[in-house]
Image (tube, rainbow, N blue to C red; front, side, top):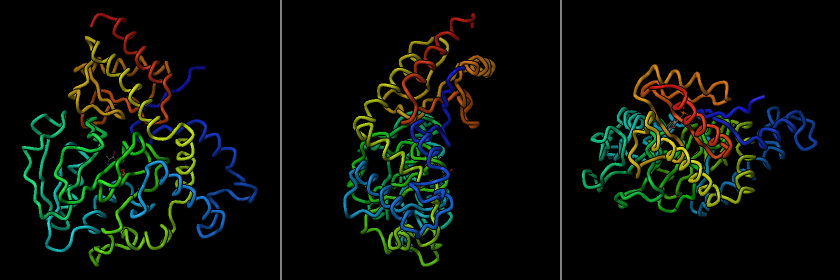
Length: 362
Ligand SMILES: *Cc1c(COP(=O)(O)O)cnc(C)c1O
């Protein structure tokens, strides 16, 4: 039997230990005789699950007391509407940095409901490098400055503390790199992430928001997207995605057991470096992203020829390397190396890259 290594960008692999625990507890959680799927979200049992999940998340990210943690529905794209509805007062504008497909979509959503302005972009590098602050046109009176900390499709990642104006609150879409490294939460006004990349199964988005930013929502904001309503009701104004939050809670426990985010970051750096080194040494494949902007989570690469890329994907499948196909908008391949990807998966990938190159005259 070959081991399967799943490089999907999302929904993506989860830690094996977590999956085994979910399986063991599936029919009977903690002697209750109930599956977590069948529990009232208002039961004591479920309350203990969601409270522990929040407490462990607070510990992992060192979230200060003056920030609320909200688990809500709508995924990452739901936040594209929720952010401006909650944080941009009528008549005010919001600044957006566009570094790839996801931040572009966020700007489009915000433009539908009010004023949103592209303050800075990395279009001059074809979305393959970090934007240059001096090229920006920032509005000091903006309600906030939004950016995507890791562009999942093009593989461009900001550092934890990017070189950006700090006079308006930073709002970051961390869907694909949350919990991959320590985050200085206090420098952000709000952080959000869809669940299905580095947190757990699809079904919720996580929001960490400074309490000073609550109570500003537009009156037409749907209650299920209203941070204030959800924060004041412990994420239980409506039924939260209970099972997904339970699995995420087990992932948080697993991360704490790994030594927390400093330790995880070191592992992620080691893993990503192995892949980048192999690609940089290859005369067949290359990664188009500038070295300073390279993501630890999502690595796009290509031979530049679609028939060779397709052959590579067929070559690696019997080796158990799956879901490596790049996003349809860019083609090629993409290796997503989320926290749960073991080092053996990286070794299998780098070996396959070298073997494929040796296997024929390209
Ligand atoms: C996946 C992703 C999203 C969209 O998340 P959905 O849960 O599909 O709505 C948004 N932003 C980034 C950076 C992503 O990677």
